[in-house]
Amino acid sequence: MSTRIVVTGLGAVTPVGNDVDTFWDALVSGKNGIAPVTSFNTEGLATTIAGEVKGLDFTGYVDPKMLPRMDRFILLALVAAKETVKDSGILEYPDLDLERVGTIVSSGIGGMDTLENETYRIFEKGPRRASPFMIPMMIADMAAGMVSIDYGFKGPNYGLVSACASGGHGIGDAFIAIKAGMMDACIVGGTEATVNRVAFAGFCAMKAMSTQNENFETASAPFTKNRDGFVMGEGAGLIMLETLEHAQKRGAKIYAEIVGYGATGDAYHISSPAENGEGAQRAMKMALKMANIKAEEIDYINAHGTSTPMNDRNETAAIKAVFGEAAYNVSISSTKSMTGHLLGASGGIEAVACIKAIEKSVVPPTINYSIPDEELDLDYTPNVAKNREIKYAMSNNLGFGGHNVSLIFKKFSE
Image (cartoon, rainbow, N blue to C red; front, top):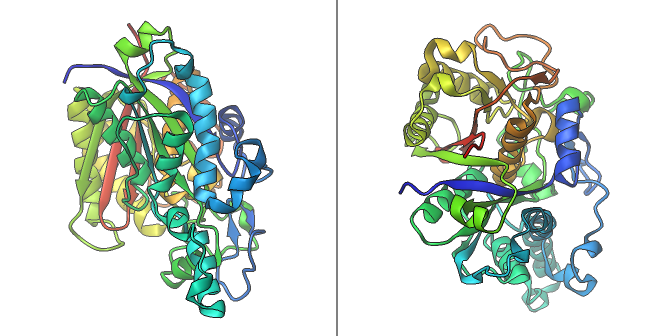
């Protein structure tokens, strides 16, 4: 499995920008994407803030007649897919074999808006009033299905569900599948749209979300001592992966190379991470082994960094265990401080952030870093981006159920 896999296209729709350039510029400038929720009535909820996608007109991407037949998580994926496909230029290749192009678009939850709305309708008006589109709008694989249909990609086509690790798992699986010869290229990443009353009620009941509603601009505060929970976000992030040979044949622009993937299970607890991030440690070690590099060669880690007390403490412990003294030399940041936590889409947009960081030689900051936590003493790139040559970047995603993913991207060279 010596085939080299490269990144040739990027797409993102996020709470801080609806395309890759706007998203990246926002990250570098430390823009906050968290604000009071506007999409539903938050009365009675402990948390009333989120990172919502703003100013996006879906009629520019989808036939208006189809809009009522698609859940928001599907629509967000279609927006990111359009940018990714265009950026990659893959459809302009005259010898493209559509049967060798895959689609893996993951989601942790899927069509929760549809589930919520249709449940109300069924209980209020009876089961015969359910929409015939309810199931295809709701099931989590349908973002992948619709992207595949839109572009005629007939290779492997599915979505993964592993909570907040979904997007990362999808990218890792695409990497392995391309190496195994199942396809030449794959559009892959994650999408999520769960800023609604049902999702908020559930996460608030778990006491997982920040309740710093009045201080919404600083509520998502990974690694800082006064962090009190994550802030939910929504959006989608996709990348185009290809074999190096395929990319070079068609003269594609190459952003970076993907060289490492680790995936492990905690076998510990339904929502709490294993002590000292034991599962995350093994995922990072697995990714490093596949990449055939030492931990000290990693220049940047885009941390899972959710802003929950337990995640940030355990992820820091995991990094220290894997990197040893080199943990104090690596630049770390959590872009969730700006976007909020996009759940199953996190791995997608954070892969884009890693790839742009490599391309631009810039480490995006962790904003809202105000009060250092004595237990957390690594370089979290507090509040201001910094210039740094990045040869290798690691992206970590961890999910409820004990799912751990680590991806490694490398600056491309012939």
